[in-house]
Image (cartoon, rainbow, N blue to C red):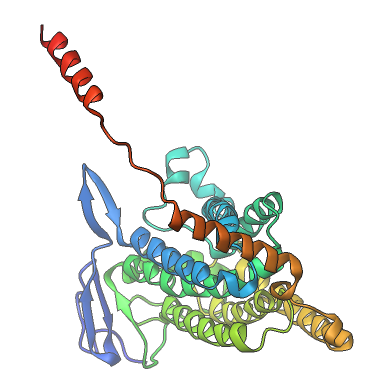
Length: 350
């Protein structure tokens, strides 16, 4: 295995990121800009961008699953809030020794510290409750979210790139990377990493696995495949979210095994274990549900084909037509109002 220096890159700056075998050398300041004394991080900008693109996809395809976008809006807002709280809570709780007693640090997410599994759990719980209250069918809603999750995660992982985090063990592969922050992290944390993985190979002089890149590629590829399945091969409500769980769970299980910053309980990589459980559980449910739907034959009806869905979509279209036909009237100032205003202004000046 060649060192970073042997590959032609030495004395890396703190914000320098290199992919030696690809000839890529960039400088990325995690702070995008500062406004009114507040530093805005690329991490946050990228996470929000991924979220907005996922939302755009969801709303453009909402009627494909038989759901009125207007009724679903509250559920999506609830899901977003639940995701933010859940992602941070999951990360903080599993790193409690680093956060206890420092409430400002707990809510400071500008430099990272959001756990995807916590975000998914929070989104499903809070979004599911709001959907129940708004009478929005949960399984079709989750199907559209399954593709959206992969879009958001695939884009959001590049926030880890700007922070030089979510990397793995030393490697000499084509996509190996290094950076000033990566080398510093390894120098400060190697002993802690070595304590839970006796087989780890981690040295700041050597390049590492860009795990964020692997996961981004895996998620975006999954988004394409699941969208194809969503359009052409969806046989039952809940199918796409189960496929998402299998796809993401398997990929995360493999990639998490390469990482050196895993959230730990004792010697257990929490996210890797959870990913495996999710993958296997979803695979079993997929097989069971496919068998059930096959036995039911034409008796099984997707929600989009039910009378309830058709009625709700028809009502939504009718509201839209009425709004276009009768837009809200703009207030018109009358002469008396102008005279009254002028008179008031004169009195004020007097």
